[in-house]
Structure formats: structure tokens, C-alpha cells
Length: 254
Image (cartoon, rainbow, N blue to C red; front, side, top):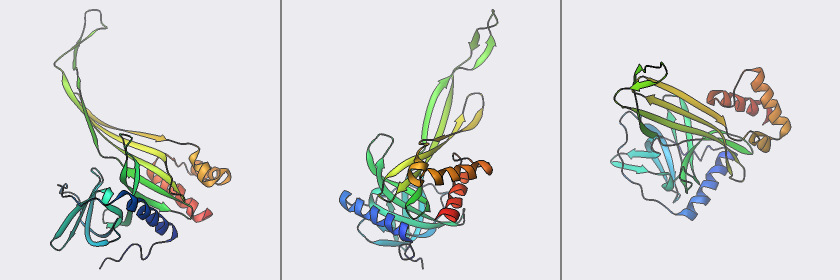
């Protein structure tokens, strides 16, 4: 049977969980809602700590595209939003690792503070590296299709207007200090564009706060991490590289 994740949690993990619980008792409990979840999501054994202090142990699947968490145990079937959950964890068969998520109040894309799920990628003595994936954004626009060149050789004539669809999703990485402040650090946006002429994919990576690492770790330690990244050709704007850099920090500075 799946054991409670809090039973085996380290100091930082328990600190994050307690911070979550104190936040959500003040917000209030949201009822579990039913929702249609894509069938390609995999069910995994896991546990959910709800904001009323109860723990649900059973099968979980998390849809990061919508931010919905589904739960099944026997004939019991529920779907939770971040408002009704303190934390949850499950074993991800695809990545072959245990994944742990917390729910924190944070400003959304409309600048409204509401509970949202953050994944705890790495936890340290005084801070944690978190990740949050925003819901998929789909935008469309009309584009003209060039079919010829005008008499003067410069003007372009256009045929019937076609449609272009852009599907984008943003993953943001945050550093959370011991006081519970969540600070955005790196943003990675994946964009799939289906156009009238051709389809293509592009990625936009950006360090949102170049001084944040120094603020959290101090100038000396952050400088050593930058040197390590440079020597090993690692980028702070790449997810896998970022995890390698923080793994180095954990091995050498914790």
C-alpha cells in the first residue's frame, strides 16, 4: 500500500507542507469537482493531502495542461483543483521517479491570486526549486498566402487567406525561500505553430531575474555555480542543465 509522503519527508519538505496547510486553512476548502480528463494520461499510485487535513491514498493522474488532479480508490472517483489540496505525490512511470506537488496561492496570468500547483523539483536546507506549468494557450490568426510577384518586382500578391494556429505552453521555474516567498527565476515557452504554409516549433527561454541566485545563495556561492555551468557548458535557461547545476550545489554546498 502507498505510504504517506509526510511520514518520510525531510525537513524542507515538511516545512513546505506546513506552509501550505497554514495558507489553505485561511483560504477555505473547495469541493472536489468532476471533469473530463484526456485518456492518454496514466494512472499512478499516490497520495493526496487535502486542506482539511485528510489524506487520500489510491490511484492518481495529474493533467498539467488543465491543472486538474483525478483520484480513484475502489468505487470512489474525484477530481480536485489546487484550492482543495495541500500537496500530492505519485510515482511517474514515464520518468521513473517520485514526483511531489504543493499548492500555493500565487498570481495567475490575469494577475489574480489563487491556489496553483507547483512541483518541488529539488529541496534544500533553506530554499526549494519549484516548477509550474501554465495551461495551454491556443491562439489563431489569418494569414495571406503569397502567390506571385508584382510588375515592379517588389510587391507581392496574395491568394486566399489561410489560418494559423499557435499552441503554446509555459513552464516557469521558481526559487522559494524559507519564509515561503516564491520568486520566478527562469521561463521556458514551447510554441507549436500550424500554418498555412508549414508547421514548426520554437522555444523561448529567458532568465527572469539574473540577481535572484545571488539573493538566495550569496555572491560567492552563486559565482561558483556560474563557473561550474560555464566550465561544463550548461545553461541556466535549460531545464535539464538547471537541474544538473542545482545537483552540483546539493553535492558541494549543502
